Amino acid sequence: MRTYILILLAASMILACTPKESKEENNKTAEQGTNPEMEKLLSKYTTFKLEADLTSLSENSKKMIPILVEAGDIMNELFWYEAYGDKASLMEGLEDEQTKAFVNINYGPWDRLNGNKPFVEGVGEKPMGANYYPNDMTKEEFEKSTLENKSGLYNFIRRNEDGSLKSVPYHVQFKNQVARVSELLKQAAEFADDPGLKKYLTLRSEAVLTDDYQPSDFAWLDMKQNPIDVVIGPIETYEDQLFGYKAAHEAYVLIKDMEWSKRLEKYAAFLPELQEGLPVSPAYKTEEPGRDTELNAYDVVYYAGDCNAGSKTIAINLPNDEEVQLKKGTRRLQLKNAMKAKFEKILIPIADELIDPSQRKHIKFDAFFGNTMFHEVAHGLGIKNTIDGKGTVRKALKEHASALEEGKADMLGLYMINQLHKKGEVDGELNDYIVTFMAGIFRSVRFGASSAHGKANMIRFNFFDEMKAFTRDEATGKYKVNFENFQKAMDALSEKILTLQGDGDYDGVAALVADKGVIKEQLQADLDRLSAKGIPVDIIFEQGVKVLGL
Image 1 (cartoon, rainbow, N blue to C red):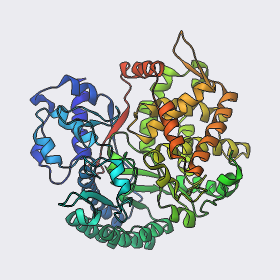
Image 2 (cartoon, rainbow, N blue to C red):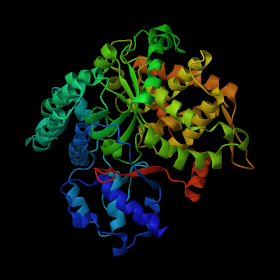
Image 3 (cartoon, helix red, strand yellow):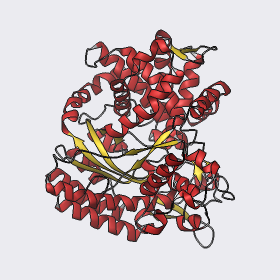
Image 4 (cartoon, rainbow, N blue to C red):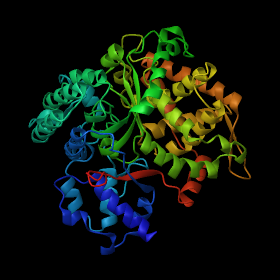
């Protein structure tokens, strides 16, 4: 255990450090004092080294990676401000290295895998709006305000001297940092062999200075042959749990697997047909998914900011801009090295503990990869705008939008697999995907209520339980899928989610979350068994230029 904790400490310093942190701080070890409670919290994570085969990259591409990693480091700094505020003042008050390591993993003093429970004495509960809004601001005050663009993605809400609300754009709040990011992206563009990548990096370098990301989003979708990719900027809105409006800064540095990507590209062509067949009334599927949707596989070599906090992302569906999605589609990025780590280190041990032995043969990596991939593809199905003029689904459902959207993607991802399997377009047994999906519910529900994915899995588990989609053996504590009922539950929950989204039914979604977005006593006992067995909840990365040998 001692060696394991030391490895976690070292890795956590790598994953969350910023250029401003001193080498002396990063080189401290747990030998300077131990904290048993923090050691237990750290044991929820296991380490994984983010490596990739760089031999196929040109010299110019290899030169880009350290530049993009440096830009990613700045995203760490920006996300720290969004999630907490002043990192330095928090760290100065901490004495033991285990607590500092766990703070780094969580980008703050709240445990992201335990409903944002505070683990540093005296910090209090995490504000629902993180650091995007004044702590003393109520929802009612915000909603009554006539402040222009108050629900925009790229601004903070602050107070004037007279106490009234004001808007501070990201590019103003982070003027010095985004100026440096812009400079780095321009430097990287000079080494881009692919014209599409060069154009994207150039436009993105301008976007961080203006908060106008749409032109660079279109350019990102246009590039096809780039061996290097970077996703960088304010992107997801999960951190804002007050309204779900404000985007959080993050970065991924990626190396594209051309061979795997070629194998995946055929599925995008089926989207229009699958949209028509959704198990919901016609009014909720009139939108046509973008036909330029693309599926690619990557090895990720660097995570920073939002995507690196708590549970780690293993697949991405972007851009989030509804207008871009409807006009151009999206790109789904499968992060296969990170996916493999979670499958081997977490999902297989969970299945061994909780899945009935008669169905354990169905736990397969190809099914895990497929479920994850089609989850991302399924974000493009369904509806982006309410059917009664309430605007986008995201704005109508506010803080509940993300959890419901993740639930939709899980359900429609399975729906896609089901339909494509009938056509002979998906390999393997259908039951492989279903049982692996069931094991995946246990994996994701452990992320807790502070995670949109965790909340979506709580809802699904309870809904499926009520529809008898699975049984639990009281003697062994093992779960067994009822395949017929599972299919019925899948269709029923898909219809419910799509209807709630299309109606923009905020109250209906709130009721669903309150009723089913909870971990009941029996499930909690089973999840505790996983912890008792030492099965980690998630991973942290050893990553960066040195790990890559650059």
